[in-house]
Length: 512
View 1 (spheres, rainbow, N blue to C red):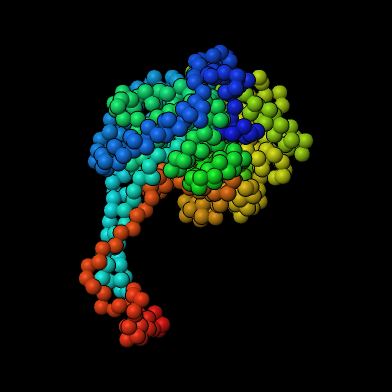
View 2 (spheres, one colour):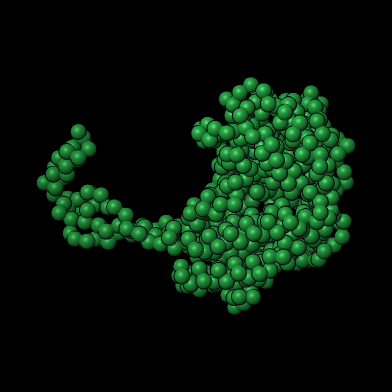
């Protein structure tokens, strides 16, 4: 549920709305996107400050590793309790920095707490050392596999879900035994500082979790410090720049990038339910959700009926800047121009605006826009819009729907609506995405045991679940000789008799 992070200055990286830079000021301002008012000033961490944070983290990581699974579980559950107790406070910070209604911010905090709880309670089960079969050829060896912490993980977070998304890396990295240095978006630094202060309230002398604030250069500095892994959330173009920085020191990277997620609506779908989820996926959080809904493919026999229901539902939406609003302003002001250009391109290509249009794009708020009959080559179909617009195109059948859904370079999530659950599973298997929900939208996001991530332009690697815990660990193989091997093969003075016997055994075991 993520997008737009900052490490380098690119058209797709986030940028602070004010023109400050490290060269011009030692601090930067966090602004309220609803009014443009300054919320607070935060320091710009330079290379030296970032390096010092990583050095502290390396020392803390040794203490954290020594706590073992049980000790880390206890610390993290205390952290979870502290976050849960302060959920209303944290949600208020999220709401103010992003502009989203308080209720949406609170839901985000709830989901983050669920993931923190799961990571803390399941790390031992997933990562503890265990015996593995040795096989006949190495029968004299006792083999075991364990997962060890990487050391220090750098997390570069987004602004659209500034708690849920980075905590999907932070929680699992901490549970796996790593120290974390978190660089929040420059649009939501207060969220990062709130989390750091909460950690310090339970473990003030152990900088296992630290936050460095700043602009793009701060994120680049974090990637250059030699941390043991970077967890990045943002656009594909920015991810490529982060990868280039990481390549300098062979620092591994897990990247959750953008999405152009499709919904498929079958002829037998519950259209009211599908329209309700479509409205939520397309317009919730002002459409600033990479795993939401940007394209909808509806079988032609129910296309108009679905479109009518969706339009009726969305017509009741009330975007604005209050907690009673359906959704808030655009958090990143320059994203407004991208949304406008996608609408213009869709209409110029022959598409139709069923609701809204170019006039829906305001200075801060974008009213809902529903487009149909949009060419598959248009920007509104091929590129991430990341705003409160959606394309609803008709298709002949479900096969065409799958082909069109797979027609972009993105592969994050998708959704399918059909009363035939077996058919839904079959279609899910054919979609080139990392995640699919049948008869819901974002169903996978709230289940901590499911990995979250995409393919193609949507990135690589996984957070959440057992895969997320292993993402922030390194497998370590250990063998212990149980008894002397009956065949002397691992020797510079290998007996011919033993080699001949091995050849006969190979043919007997594998050559028949």
